[in-house]
Length: 169
Image (spheres, rainbow, N blue to C red):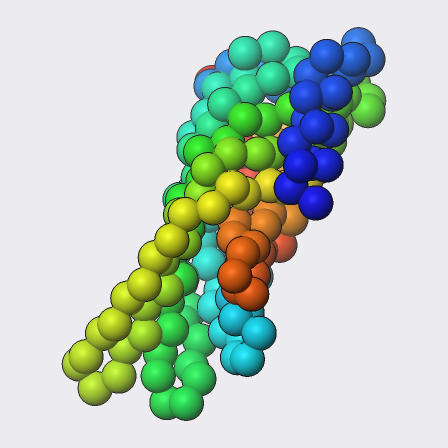
């Protein structure tokens, strides 16, 4: 799946049709419904997603995302917090004068922390993340909705459905 999304991103960069996608530097804030599933148990903390990036033109951009649990999830009386980082290449495909779809691909890091009675244990690992999203202009801001897989190996799957607002400079 990751290879297919990466190849599709490359194809969009090479063959995208003329249209409109936001250009220049941007910052965004959003919320996400994150799911961490190891095949046995699942935690679903609610996360905040912060992004900064730069769209070089209407087809290609580069960005960085950091996410952290705003509302932790509890499993077996242990509070779980998930933090994600994502350095991504963004391929955009304009679909109208005000909207575009995009694909994201790049290295990710996921850190899971479990806390109980003042004791915390953490584990983190790296993978290649992929995502697909939609962005549209609403007055001075742009609304985005996307689905990102941050981690998918060794039976562990971490993904999130995000929604938020992006502001271009």
